[in-house]
Amino acid sequence: MASIGQKPTGGYSVTLDSSEIRGGTLELRVRVAEPAPGTIVTQALTTPCAVIAVTAEGWDDIQITRAENNR
Image 1: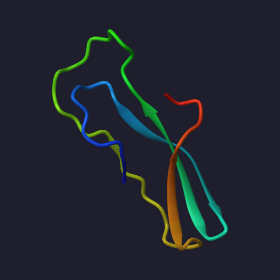
Image 2 (image 1 turned 180 degrees about the horizontal axis):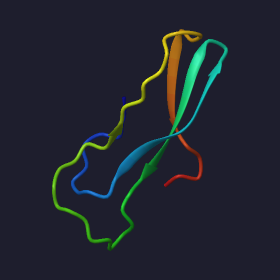
Image 3 (image 1 turned 60 degrees about the vertical axis):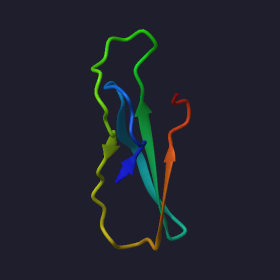
C-alpha cells in the first residue's frame, strides 16, 4: 500500500505510474494528484492510498518513489 497520509479535503489521489524489478529490488513509482488552489473540494478528512498487488517472486526489497514532474 502506498499512502500520502491524512489530508484535510478530497481531491487527492495516488496511482501506480510504473514498476520494475532492478537488482532484487521492486521499484514502484506512484503519481500523486492534489487539488489545484481554489478548486471546490469536499471538506472531509481523507487518507489517499493505492493498494498494489504484486507477486512475491524475483525481489527481496521494495522501494516506492513519487513520479518526477509530479507536484
